[in-house]
Image 1: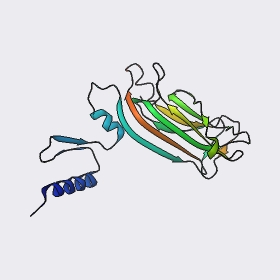
Image 2: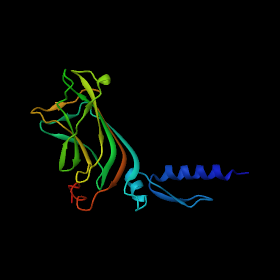
Image 3: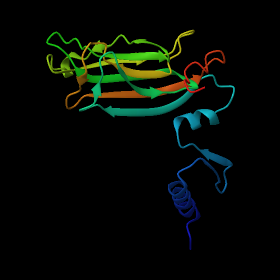
Length: 188
């Protein structure tokens, strides 16, 4: 005799694995269930009445041997057409013996990005080598955050050493106000 619940779960898992896309499934005894492939698709599927959408997205960016030109940057993350309403950034980046890094983590809505006010995590830092900094990321009225970048504001190209990383966690997003939704998309 076939266990229908076990068969349904196995069939659903196989369908998700095989398609790798957003789909609607009919599960016996349940209503239609939508499965989102990305946090943005999840946000689009939530009710229009909700102004904040809970998502959980995390990106670990390995920067070892990456070069950032003088006055240049590497764009790390973009949530356009949504803004980050609850998130966190941790950066393990080069620092001097006073635990000050020449690099900046930029946040905002492109092209209006500014250095984040990073806090040193002293117990996990090695002054003169690599220091860990972190900051909470929350959009404010009139100051949406959609973009995160790492900048080299110095006059020399910087090649990042082993273990250089930036970890970005996004917990909540919400739609950008209509007046600013096109600002962050530089292709339109």
